[in-house]
Length: 174
Length: 100
Image (tube, rainbow over all chains, first blue to last red; front, side, top):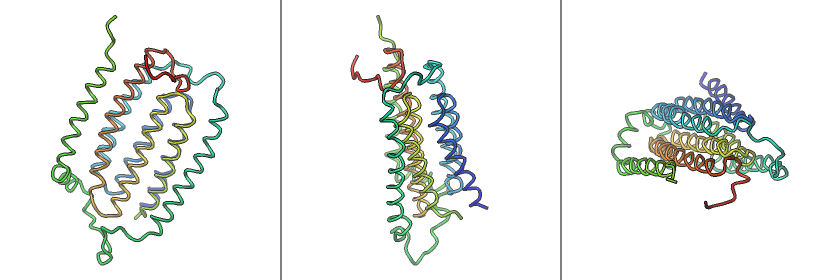
């Protein structure tokens, strides 16, 4: 059952990612990306990461994509990517290069993940890792315990981004 | 129970699609969205590995990646808007100046 759900979600995710790359209209691409982010959120749920699934929907599908759609609406020239492509020969190289990259990643995964020994964190004696390790409770404890300093630094980062965006977006006088 | 290797394979496929998107497209907004796609694929692999290791640390890391991505998108879109204001066109092939 879980396997069936995974394959359905995986197919939807790959198709929506291809839609983002192949559609000419950036708005369609943005909507495809929303579908893709939702699929990844469901995969997080399947992996038992409820907190991340919610954060994915709120931060990515909610905040970031609204920003993208807003920017597309502001900037859209209507006719996107028209005219002859000056770098067509280079772009045709992208597909074989992408296939090569996928092959390399597959090779690395094959040698290190599928065939490799179990993670050093998982002792051979305790075959099943603790199932409750990924719950919201443990994430919250880690976030406000071991990772408290990075968590606070994140707020400084967001403030810096806020000030930077204001400085960039401000129209220069005259 | 889905094996974690399936998630890593899916993550590799999504990452490659994002790379091809960055290489093929000319609109900086679409290139930016492809970068988000790659970030998501990396996050998915990270969560899958964390699931395999049985710890929640990977989830905290992914949460930080999401926050940094939010900041990155805000600044990046502001830069794209500023470039558009200066040049009135959006094509990465023509954006060769590094000053104004």
